[in-house]
Image (tube, rainbow, N blue to C red):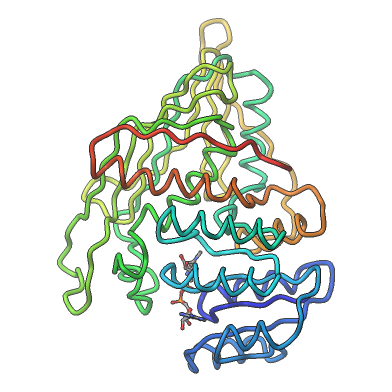
Length: 363
Ligand SMILES: NC(=O)c1ccc[n+]([C@@H]2O[C@H](COP(=O)([O-])OP(=O)(O)OC[C@H]3O[C@@H](n4cnc5c(N)ncnc54)[C@H](O)[C@@H]3O)[C@@H](O)[C@H]2O)c1
């Protein structure tokens, strides 16, 4: 198989590492206009063929049926990369957030349909992890009864991309380049995880808010206009757990003056499950009632496989390209997920409710 990377930055190197773990040899190509990025990529992957221009890389040879392109640039360049990649007739996996806005995501979907190629988003990075699969098994078992409430809160005190995390990549802080802050950065994973576990047919955003907490080290030398704390009340409809509406309290932050919290809990009429979606080393707890007393047990997630979360986008997508079962979110499904992320901003700005219907998953 041949893998073509557009962008040779931090995340591109993780995709190259994933390619080396696939069960077939992968020929690696990478394009980036920044010579320093190409140089450090070459130092890690000397076998890679490198290019200063993505079009030159993709036009050099005709597409093969199982070629994959990964667009691994900052969000402002995702659409151009996807246009080039699909235009060259290759299956295309785009980093999260999929696009800058819904119109761009829909253009990507149209292009994929025209070209008859698969198009997916790396927002599935945490899908298929064993502890999340264990939660899905608990939900499917009926042990929780009718599910009515979910708490999904993940907030760090100081972990802003472009400041405390990866400070060299200042583009994260500029809305024109990143499309937004924490909702564009972590929101895609949160939506993918919540939808994976709860399978809603539609999502109402009942209320949403966004904020930019201030600190003494906020950069003054670059434009910094993105939010780092966002939250919403969702109603998930038509999903698992009895089919009734599920109220979801959602919060995500990389800067807060409140207390750092990581809580994921699904509550039903007969039980609750609590887990740490982004840390597979933490246990999954099932809480039920026996003779009027709370019983808490841990759920065995099973043996870990060889892949890390950084490997999973390519692992899932390459399986889908080969026609194998896979949790990759492709085509309309990838766009639906992104519509939920963008609708968070719309709901927060307008104070109005938003409803997004979800295309059923093809596995
Ligand atoms: N860094 C992370 O931990 C992480 C994790 C998951 C996803 N992502 C996503 O991956 C994407 C890239 O992030 P990153 O952290 O690797 O950024 P980065 O700043 O490390 O690298 C981005 C690279 O893209 C290159 N680039 C810009 N325009 C280009 C173009 N037109 N053609 C080819 N290359 C171009 C830049 O020169 C740079 O080398 C973003 O969408 C981000 O949200 C990053």
